[in-house]
Image (cartoon, rainbow, N blue to C red; front, side):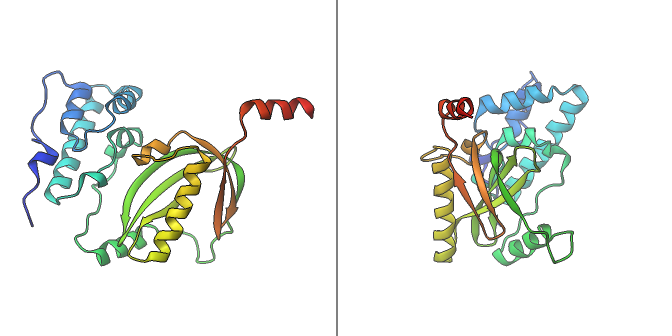
Length: 225
């Protein structure tokens, strides 16, 4: 195995004396969206003990990614890592082969319920709570978490790149429709999708994404009713 790329991850032991968020930022291996990361840390408002726990976990994750030569694009956004309290989780599984990754992913996503899964249906206005890139075997996917109004959140896994041309074309087509529905032309990062609302309908066989009407049209319809 090749040695970690020090230019990519930086010195794991470099910690500024000011502590606090600056200490976390100095050790986290992906320096991206500083303002969002600061806001996420501020929302947590950790005391000294919790900050020490966060900083220690951040160093462990950084060392883990570096020792396994993980590309930076697969490292979680710092704001997302903080907001989802991932310092409480185990270190992520990293596999050197696609087969091992596919097997581990299948086990991780295995349903706890019986094989006859309940029928999934949705027809509601949903907000995008989270979005994150990850590898699923040989496929690069984006996992989008939707929160329907008055319902439980659910994940949608959309294939972005795949050795299978059909899977890639279907996934990229769905991703384009999703981006069109939230009026985001070319997202530069998965988190660029977060916070938008749209109308979703469909079920197990597929989802359709529709742009919400402008507020003035909604208000006019309500007045007419």
